[in-house]
Length: 436
Ligand code: PA5
Image 1 (cartoon, rainbow, N blue to C red):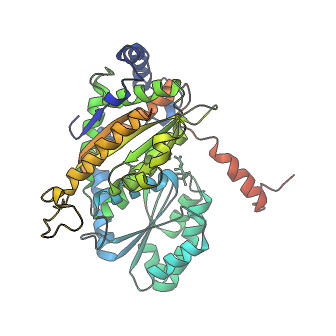
Image 2: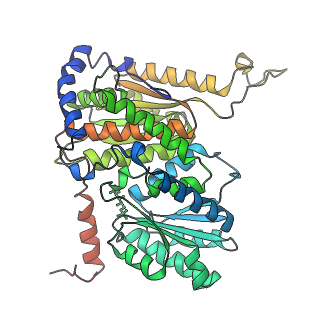
Image 3: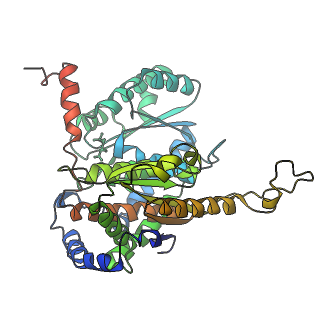
């Protein structure tokens, strides 16, 4: 574990070492099943050794396209939903400055992740006068939300710069052969990147789905991949819970789930983690929530939410456990100054850094919630850098895949997501879906 560490001490009153060791045999067996591609959903294991197998030519093509986009456009719109957008947003928010100008990056916007006329109208307003590039991302190539957003944004771009120039400013990331988006991209002559057949949406952040927008944002995708590669090596080497932290995390959360702790609250202690947690929620919810099983993945952002959800966490229903997600070192720490009159009574903190205060807030919260009957564990990210994030992405992918197998569900499909679509299409009279 180079940049990530997991502390499970505050789960010990609930999960004993004996129980944990008791799961080792099953985890060893499931590790083999995963590695040998013998489990449920084994056609979707392309993510498993993707960091070590991604080709140099692919990385170079992504970097080249990203630098051309940065030169050509000052606004870059990522159009996608679910796994076709959350990973990129997570990485960009984690690595870039939280406010103000982002140097070396086109300004990044997002579309196609909701169905709101207000959002898209405001986005069109925000893009006016800017040199715009679009990246439409859809594995199926048929998802309604990004398809609508793309149609509207494409039309606006064509009106602005003409059809020929618009074609040069659109990149499509989609299936190699099938889907409406692939056909459209071929017909229009857009530059395309391929989403591998054997990688599902929520496991696709380290494919061009995530890597191209991340590179356009000026983030070093090689460092991101290096972190993921380190974690891949570590988790592939051995299923031993003493060494394999991803499996240790999976084992503890599974044992807590079996005790009726049916909600996992991911509690982050840094604002840059907001979309990392959203990405984790998708990964977890879509992978595990099947056959009436699976932890409910919830989230809070501390210390902000200690002043809203903190009450519930301390004294509400005891059906939860917490996983704290921390950043060890801020990129830009600040010191609290001494004040002559000390009217705000803060001189006892003078000379202390904000990281120090945040750390004490975390420690105090972890102890309080444990005392209140909430088992908790802590994942600490050493730094806010691409290597650490790459490691974290892979850590969760590996842990959640194994968690799905522990629940005897297929972690790589999402049949439940289709249900709302069928109803919506019927209500919208989509050809082929008319109400009988
Ligand atoms: O994880 C998944 O498979 C989903 O969240 C998809 O990523 C999401 O529904 C978007 O699908 P598509 O990329 O086909 O447009």
